[in-house]
Length: 166
Image 1 (cartoon, helix red, strand yellow):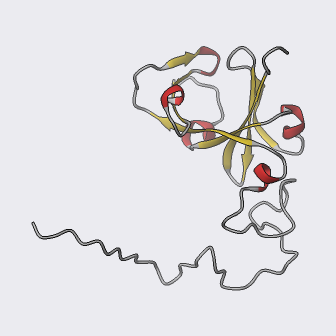
Image 2 (cartoon, one colour; image 1 turned 30 degrees about the vertical axis):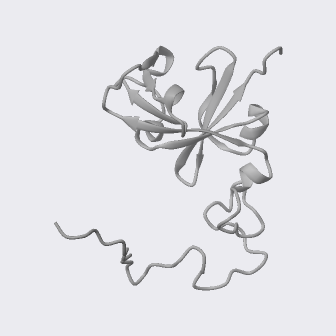
Image 3 (cartoon, one colour; image 1 turned 180 degrees about the vertical axis):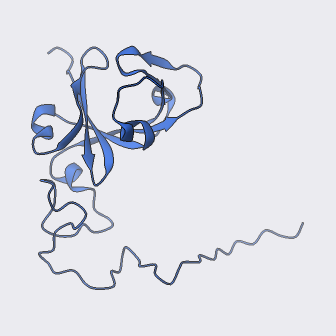
């Protein structure tokens, strides 16, 4: 084998548009077109170096990324009320949680088929106001309340944890 080339060529379709340089400069008062009916829509477009609005303005904190799978994994925990096995979160430095569903799971089809991002919130009921809830608040474990909302066709989990001593 010859030497390894360090050059990287990126091939993009002619229709590709850089996220950093829109084809048309947005008006300074442009709103997020992907979610105009959502209360979290902002009055300007987010720059690539800025955190999402729910992090910057609402104080939501990244918790995990849930990924549906059909493959049994080591150290699964079974959550009977959801017909769901979870694994990976306690050992993942990135917060990846694998989710394997039983055929009889009554959870929303999008939760069972699409990955979701989860945010910790200080007040779950307040965070759910105005949202399209696809899994109402429930308690997957002691001291935890969680719900799933639908944002631009993607499931998003909101989680509240009882603080120690409360």
